[in-house]
Length: 270
Image (cartoon, rainbow, N blue to C red; front, side, top):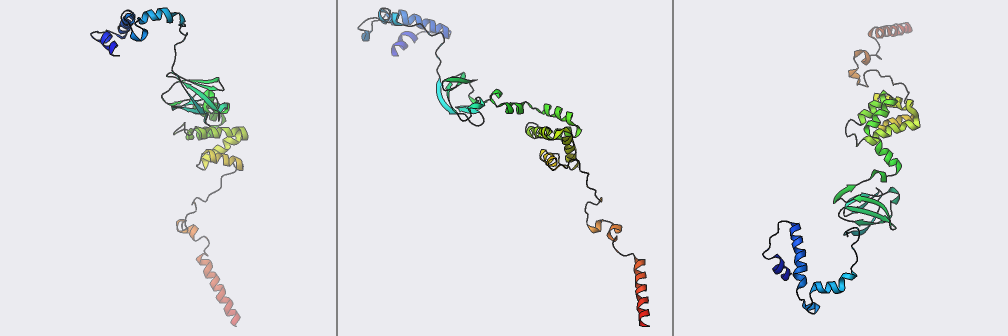
């Protein structure tokens, strides 16, 4: 290093990396390569290279060498493996299997028993998921977007559409599964019963997927609404005088009963 510093770097100025590289090659061949070298028995490095080494060199490979790191990972139940600080998806059929991972600066390759099964662009940190790695039923779930749910609900009926709209009104993606659950009841119970159950759930003020499913299981979607008195079970003093004294004996009737009783007692004493 001192020789390179003193012979090549000292006193030189370079305008670019390319300029420096060109000058370095020239210096290596014409200066450093021509000087006598004690470890080589006083011979010049370029002379030894031409006489002994040049003919043994092989051509460069067609692709440049890439520094890669190998590791092993186990595919989790969520179809992802962890490589460094990143999660990468692999085909769902490999859940629970151990795989070999080849990581480079630009690419992550996953191998099972020597066979390449998945390739991802490298990510320093985070998560890379290919939806096609999920099982078919999972892909179908993810494709049922809020727009799809609203369209399907409209085909079933107004009540079903109202239920789905309420479910997706806030945090649509978070409550997407609930909306899909309501629509999934159509397959088992049919559109007519589902629409009736949605209407009944709205009427009772609880248009949730659990309530609608419970109504369908119980078969009460077509039951008539229970009659109410209008007072909603209010206390007696809130019912009004007519309801409060409905079971009391009217005053006139009470007087007549007393007169009859007194008259009967008088006749019995004679």
